[in-house]
Image 1 (cartoon, rainbow over the protein chains, first blue to last red):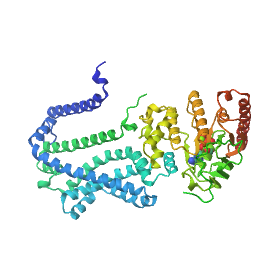
Image 2 (tube, chains in turn red, orange):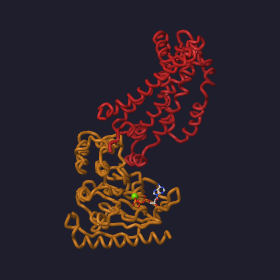
Image 3 (tube, rainbow over the protein chains, first blue to last red):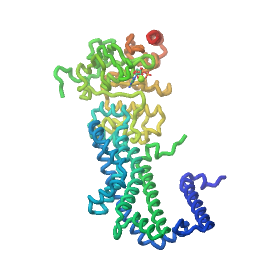
Image 4 (cartoon, rainbow over the protein chains, first blue to last red):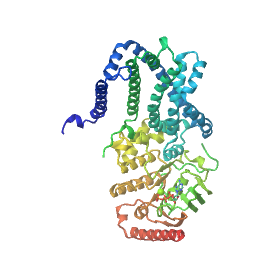
Length: 267
Length: 285
Ligand SMILES: Nc1ncnc2c1ncn2[C@@H]1O[C@H](COP(=O)(O)OP(=O)(O)OP(=O)(O)O)[C@@H](O)[C@H]1O
Ligand SMILES: [Mg+2]
């Protein structure tokens, strides 16, 4: 009852999901063994980790390729997305003229246009990056634009009353106020950049030195190396979770002094 | 920057002018038959005429929703009038912010930037005016001291109580040493002790600096204690129904609060307010 670990919120926050994960994998392993499922249909966690160990080198290389595209795409999405938002808030005209095209990009299925992009852009890394950017940029644009527009109207009035320049209004009022929205966008966008990178690679099917995790999955499935396929899958989801955690950490770091999302409420 | 035909700045004049004594004082605000209709059709103000003279302390008093905030915001140049006209120092709004024509506004709620510390919030007007240096820090210290927040400069707004946030907001308004100070129920959220103290502080500052203050309040006592003139408003449609001059000398102290005259003024203002409230009801039926 008075176990200090249980009372430690941080500990519970990490331990609880970990416990669920371990429990799930244990059940999985037991089921696979009890029902004697063939490893090329559904491997148990033990087989998957074995495959991960055995193919460590090739998987790591593939992971780095995928990570490169993911980070490149994420970085470009953030820079370009913020630039678009800053452009949008300059005038309602610009926003209403261009925003529909941002939506258009969002609703176009990436698998449908990826082949085209891969034909247009010779360099595979850049082709994949462009696909991932198309996937990841929209949350940055929409969230940041919303944030930059959601200023307390009275604060805005005050800035205008003191004859603040547009630059002061932007840097001292709109940008700080938009940060929580921006970081919300980053959380979604980081995951989408990864998904975009993987999906594009599936379409491109690049082998050789530039093979990423998606190609690993494709190849393993052709060769019925299902444990290896799961190992690659495990690396993708693991990367996604780490990316998300990184974004949460960044957001907490930036907002911890003032924003509710990063604060513990004391009553 | 000098405006043709403008009166020289009064910054160095130490004499305190009370409207009651000096009817010829220079006008700071002249509102002429101002109507304000909001986009949703609410007639917030109808035919409001109001003159504020240099050195006056005017309170706006009236039932909730009668357009006090609306009128005050119009005087601050926030929001256009639907019809009618407003002049600042006998000029258009452009002159506001020039030397000797500084305006500060205290909103009905604190309106602080949550990401900045109290000090940063108070510094904001100086930053926006590109005023910096040691004199600037001193001004901030003074302003914080005035509202009793000297020890909270490094706190974030969320770490303060509602009343303390409001005081930070007042400090921010005072830091530029405004010539015209517009305050929308600044002390509504404060306890009576703090409120009385701030009342006295504001009066003192007003007298010492020759400011002009327009002050919205719900409290008859506060209005009578502070003002050289009380403007009573009625609702639906929002309009000015009576102006009562509080012909009592400044400085006013605790003795004034318990004096016969104070009670008499309060009675008169209350009666007027009562009348204004029933007027609103008749109209809405
Ligand atoms: N932005 C707005 N849009 C539409 N109607 C508004 C707006 N602001 C105020 N009103 C309406 O205008 C009228 C006057 O509002 P105002 O805020 O000036 O009243 P007030 O006298 O300050 O009231 P209180 O004492 O409660 O602060 C009210 O009926 C209100 O509903
Ligand atoms: Mg109001």
